[in-house]
Length: 330
Image (tube, rainbow, N blue to C red; front, side):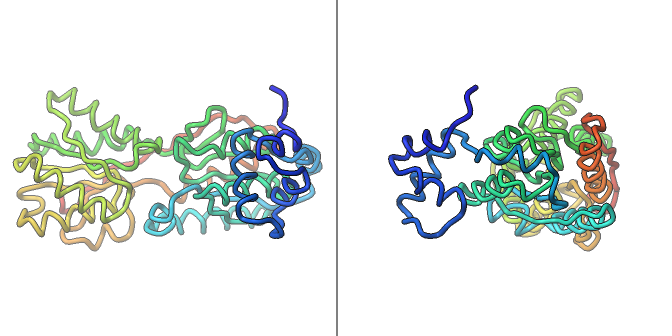
């Protein structure tokens, strides 16, 4: 496919080449209206500056961009696992003589800035975190040829990644609930445009099918409030449910709150299982049964995968095992 040119962007946006150049280079001497037109044209055409390949080939930088593509209410603002991932990645990169630059790319403008940084040759490699299925950024960066990996399985084909066993973890959680005599087992999912959410839902559904039970599903977004809201919905839809598998611990904590408000005892009336094993899972009342994700190991393995790309190492995906931690909530 022919590479989009600066002229093509200018024609699509209906502005001059110099205006496009100023927007692409991050200059502020452009009116908001023209900037919006250019950003839209860049997104539609998939344009990247021509100097990207030349600068990246020289490897004149030791900076690794960790790009988090998540809305404000998502991973960054609410999930304590995010800070653990960033700390681990920082330590691993520092030990390898690399620097980290953290970029939040949850909007069209912030994604464009991330593309500009990579295209200008200011980073040696990219680690993607918290990607959503409709996000165009991975495909745009892949066209630049920058070494790139993903923390968790991405929807963009061909990007090397490290993930934990989301399907297997959900399967273990649901099988345990069935073994405890639970028969009406619901789930609160994560956002369904994320692969991890899809995989955990798949594990839940397949296990219930094998056991001859029906699925009872509420959609969440990995936040506490969505766990609370999802649990209330589930109780309204099926007052006789006796267990819930939440696709992460934050939603499980929200579910515990909703169950208390509804006068349901945990685990006597409704058992609750989460996913991740964040520190707060130890201090809920009752303490939360959950699938323990090897988050530090996964973050470190993702860094090693990226560093290996510089030396031509294999690009095979890595799947980390997880296990079920049984506490008092189930």
